[in-house]
Image 1 (cartoon, rainbow, N blue to C red):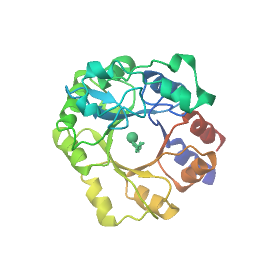
Image 2 (cartoon, rainbow, N blue to C red):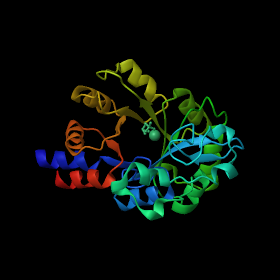
Image 3 (cartoon, helix red, strand yellow):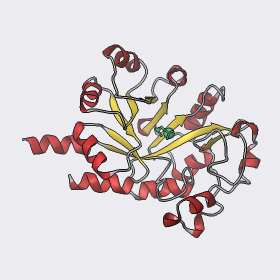
Length: 263
Ligand code: G3P
Ligand code: CA
C-alpha cells in the first residue's frame, strides 16, 4: 500500500556530504570528508580548483582567502605554496560552537590524496569548478580516476558548465554526470531542456530555495535524478523528500540521516 511506496521512495534519497560534513568541520579537508562518511553520508562532495602547476585540489572558491590563512588565486599558486596554508583555523574562528583544536593547521588536500585516503570504492561526487579558467581539468580528473581505478558506478561528476560535462562525456561516456542549475526565482524547466540534459547527464542538481513540487515531479518522472543543494533545515528536508527528490546535498549529513530514519 501507500506505506510500501513511501518506504521505497525514501530509501532512495542519497545523502551528499556537502564539502564533507562541512557544518561540523572545515570544508574540503580530509577530516570533514571522513566525518561525512561517519555521519552516514553516501557521497563525499568535492569541489575542484587547479594550481598553477596543474594539480587538482579540493577547494570551493577560486581564491584561497575564505578557507585558508592565505590570499590570492589558486591558479597563481603552486601546490607547494598551497600546502603551506592552514585550511582549518578559519573555521574555529567563524564557528566557535563547532571549533576543535585539531582543526587548526589542517591542510588543503589534493584530489589524489583524497583518492589515496578513501580508496576506489568510496562514492565521490566531484564538481569541476570554473572549467573555463582551468583548461584540461577534465583530462586530469579522468587521469586520476583511471589511475586510482575509482569505481565508476559510485562516481558522479557535476558542473554548472554544460561544456565541461560534455567534455567529460566525450572523454568517457561511462562516467555519470549531473548538470547543476541555479534558479533565481520559481524553478521552471521545459521538456526540451530536460531532453537536452538527458543526452549527456543522468541527473540535475538544483538549488533548493525556489523549487516546487511540480518541478520535482516533472524532473523525476523524466527519469533524471534530482539532487538538491544545500539543505540544512530539518523541515525543508522532510518537505523535499515528500516531494520526491532523489538526493540532497547537506552540510549536516547526520541531520538528514535522522530525518530519513524518522519517516
Ligand atoms: O554542487 C552542488 C552545490 O555544491 C553547488 O553549489 O557553490 O556549494 O558548489 P556550491
Ligand atoms: Ca559544489
